[in-house]
Image 1 (tube, rainbow, N blue to C red):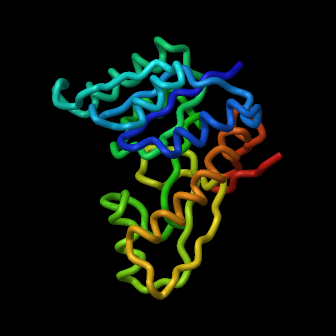
Image 2 (image 1 turned 90 degrees about the vertical axis):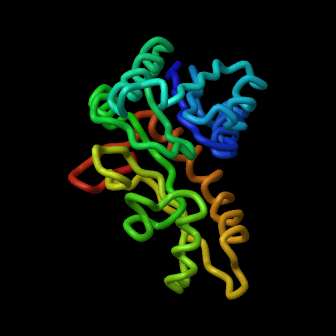
Image 3 (image 1 turned 120 degrees about the horizontal axis):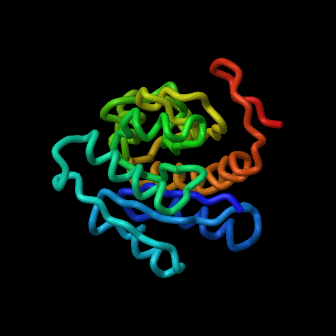
Length: 205
């Protein structure tokens, strides 16, 4: 059975959606380890509550981002991880990690890429930017991770209509509902080897 390494920075609701869909048999995989760069991330509690190894790595304990990422890579390899899922992970992976898992790392982003993505666009900042710009539709995107920021080939997207009385919190809650649907779908496609990349296009078989 394929083994997933999940990287988180916060509450871990996207992580929970994967755990639930493994438990109900939808995703034919197991989670080998959950790694967080935040000590108080509730996702670590979710992992422990489900019998999953939970690892906290403090970036300040390493000389630079490269050394920090090598520590992450070491953990992934120690737990024999086949695929990596960034589920609300608020840090940039180094080329060492990406090259060790070519086309085997995916990320969930709370907008319709290529809009409202890239450096500085994360968490509530994305939803605030969406509302400030005045667009009528946002959504969520699952994409492969490459050496850019939110630039990898897109796997799945789903739109969310914006309401006139939305604020960042209300919009975030509806986008999260979509994330919890499409991230498990993408993980399932990934571990079943049903995704093929042709240029920037991801073909689902």
